[in-house]
Amino acid sequence: MNSETPRVMQQGSNLSDNAAKRYLQPSNFMGYGLRNVRYAGWLMPLIVVIFPLGGLSQDSVATHSTDKEAASKADFEIRIGKRYVNAFCSRCHGRDGKGARGPDLTTGKFRYATSDEELLRVIQQGIPGTDMQGRGVFEDIQLPIIAYLRAAALQPDHRQAPSGNAARGYELFKENQCASCHWTGNQGGRQGPNLSRLTAPPDYVRNSMLDPNSQVDLEYQQVILLLDDDKICSGRRLHENSYFLLLMDQQENLHAIDKRSIREIKRPHESLMPSFSDKLSRGDIEDITTYIYSIQQEPRQ
Ligand code: HEC
Ligand code: HEC
Image 1 (spheres, rainbow, N blue to C red):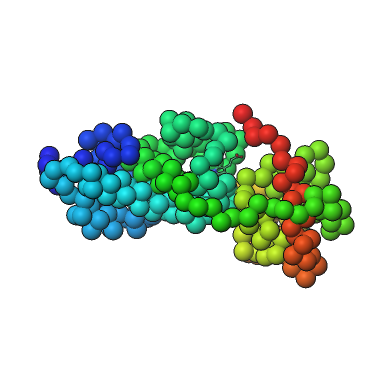
Image 2 (image 1 turned 60 degrees about the horizontal axis):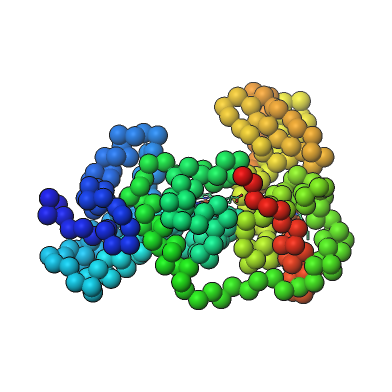
């Protein structure tokens, strides 16, 4: 592609000509990753999303602008943005950004942003103290993502807000000892996530009670260690490097274990959270979900 490269990305964002050119040139994109070894991890998903770009950009090569072309360019940007979301964000924000452990990004409402500029800042810089890390330098990726998130927010919403009885939910929460593992604002355990600062959408919360193994997070990975002195130690892995492993046992005691003293290490891919699918009815789950949303605290910052 040469200096004739069309202004494909102009519509719906203020991407510069230069950025648009870089965007359309997969070879540059990959060189970028290779020069910046720090970002090499990005490379694989990039390659996966880049290939269709070639084909798509052909449709978008315009010689003169008409409204129809402008609309199809905007549409192109939105489609690419969706692919980027699935490549870079879905691990935490779910398929199409519709929410998993991380919040649903397609509702049009953000806790940390209103304008596109603020949204860009969140995506670039992350949110301190949360899993949301800054996404670095890829402006070329961020603008289509924002175009997609804005467009998705205009689609009709079929999700169901929790509609149970919070007081009954609280009783069930106590009865089932959920608080032994979950912090609820001023009390509770720390084996699982803090439920008073939930960012997940309702369906994710409902499903977490039915099928916890479907959403095991690395942050809550369980490890079982067989030590040199034949002792067994198990719990939640808090930190690990080449030299030691820090874990929290079921009583919430911390153990820093020298890796040289570990004879065997098992990492079961099962959630510590038991399934409640045969203990709780549909109504119970709705009540608990309603209770959990009733105890949400204000976001940090
Ligand atoms: C490692 C997990 C993770 C990844 C990957 C991730 N996010 Fe996030 N993100 C989160 C979490 C968790 C939050 C909620 C933080 C909070 O409010 O406590 C969040 C919050 C956000 C917010 C703020 C939402 C609001 O209500 O204001 C935006 C916007 C966002 N993420 C966009 C993205 C985009 C775009 C990507 C991909 C380029 C991405 N995130 C990748 C975990 C992640
Ligand atoms: C033995 C500890 C334990 C018990 C008991 C437990 N949980 Fe969990 N829960 C966890 C862990 C660990 C996770 C993190 C998911 C994973 O395994 O990666 C989790 C995840 C969740 C999530 C998803 C939250 C998020 O941010 O991802 C919800 C909601 C939840 N639990 C609700 C409950 C409810 C309601 C009960 C009681 C009916 C309960 N839990 C009982 C350990 C527990």
